[in-house]
View (cartoon, one colour):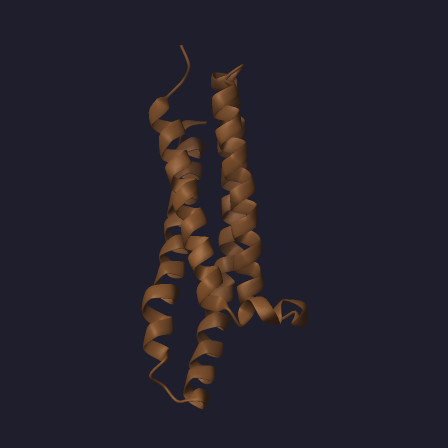
Length: 148
């Protein structure tokens, strides 16, 4: 089980780093840089980037869900009766689902969400903010350790 625990933790943290880092790249590097391009060039490069990023988003969501559920199931016995841990991890899970939804919408094609995609910078900022809250919660529950 030790190997699987390490592999799951590595997959979870590595995927989170990739997803948050990619989102920050889009928000702080790609979008501002593409503003200097003409509309046709900006549309072409944006379509190519989003098409490629979509694969990372979908695979990342799957990996985060699988590794996160495994990690949580493994942690439950050590936190029996630990209401603060379960409240914080539950909050983290709900926030992660919100992030997954927004990220999926931003790389999706459904006309229902064209309005959100037209405000991409705003929603990328929301993802970055929520990701920071998730990381803060994760850091706290990890460092806090097991209840005595």
